[in-house]
Image (cartoon, rainbow, N blue to C red; front, side, top):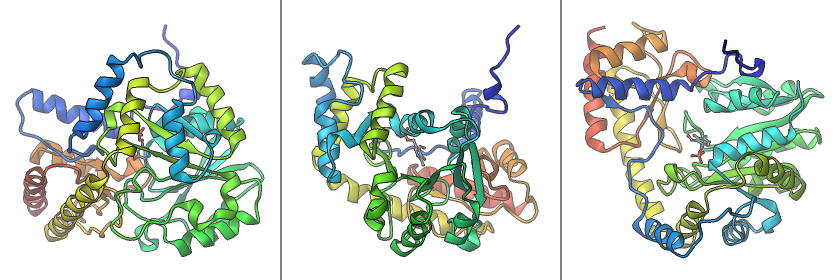
Length: 380
Ligand code: PLP
């Protein structure tokens, strides 16, 4: 019969996907469901981007792309970052950049330090590559961020990476320049530890955002920056992300990618290039809209009795569960079954007792969702 590979032990479909699929099923069966569970902007991909993709396909950009990414897109990313194209890999979403980095660098037992709450895929990606996630608990009292003392204490001879996410999914936390400096000072004492800074929400920051390499340039020769077009330009389905890092690392990641995908979709790369080099006004417009949704949601949740901090970036809030139903997955089931609202339990992000709500939805859905949550909490 069927037998799973040992390295897949305990690895399941992400709980975010499970909940979103359950919500879709309930909806298909006629239930009135407000899903606030997916991290995907409701805005359309900009028209000029779609038009460029159409033209690229008609012009014959339909063949295998260069494995590392099309020269034009790599060049544009490199120029913007002030590096060489040899420092850039384009992959099938930021997700594949991360997976490629771990596959290219982790030996069995190698450790990757990350914070809880973390984006659900981090720990499983590390495990799939044979590594060991070392998850440090970073509660709301410390802004959901890793401290330099925690980092120092967690480093062992087996540590390969510190994996940071700023702004963070699911908390919206942004590391200040001073906080990045402090982490950098620890890492300077441990030259065997490299850094991944996942900055995919960079353009959704409501306080000043400092890129890791700008705060700690001395570590640039062991830092991989992860970014992409999914969140900023509403291009989740196009699957284009990139990594910027030292050339030998990029070269190893390109070799891995060559054996797995042969590179990212050529047409989507043409589209991503148009997004990066075309008009940028939409970034500020969409950020302003997200910011006002954030304020609406934080006020609504606190008024409903769910303690919720104001996130500095991204499009998520990470409130606490209500005291009368403190177990997060129970509360999420209750909300979905009784109130028709889909949220994700904090345990999916390594921190129980919380919920994640995505506010990347139309205001009308947010208002309806908040009203339902308030009514459901009131009758607990
Ligand atoms: N990194 C973080 C923190 C994310 O939240 C996500 C998507 O949810 C990704 C990476 C993946 O982005 P992409 O769509 O480019 O694969």
